[in-house]
Length: 190
Ligand code: HEM
Image (tube, rainbow, N blue to C red; front, side, top):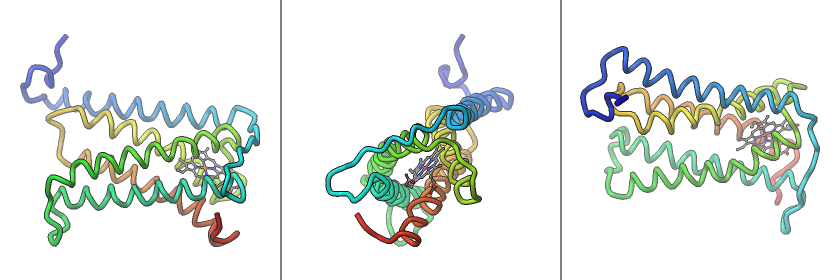
């Protein structure tokens, strides 16, 4: 069976609904699966020391700060590409910078999230930690949706910015509920 995107014809309204619904269902399944795993399995509490850092926690805090930084680059380059920052002209650098900052942010987030899920689990012992756990699961579902939407043609122009904005917001929320909390409560240290 060939889809409208394969034949090059514009998708009908019904096709568009299906084209959007499938990524959202898959993304929701990713988020729910992470949450169920984080809740069901017994947190191991395992921690790996990294040379140069005072604790495994600070490694995560700085990796998550890297994620937030590259997420900001993503937002900035996206705004430049969409002509929303008039004093910075879009050029050949914007696309690659946007893609690479996204890839780096995603890659940096993986070891942090694996440790969170495997060693700490989905926790809700206070509001910050509950919001953090929810955002941690949400962000990978939202990321999945964004990646799947990227390959689909003929969809409303606002969809991709909304999906990207949700991923960005979730990553910044994760930073606020983990690294910023650590920096203010424990201190800024390696
Ligand atoms: C995948 C789902 C995730 C779950 C269920 C989760 C859960 C948790 C929990 C329960 C904590 C301990 C909170 C505390 O007591 O302060 C924590 C800490 C932390 N999380 Fe996550 N998290 C997830 C994803 C992420 C992601 C994607 C990032 C950043 C990109 C992140 C960054 C951090 C950092 C920096 C800490 C503080 C270091 C630590 O306590 O080990 N988490 N997470």
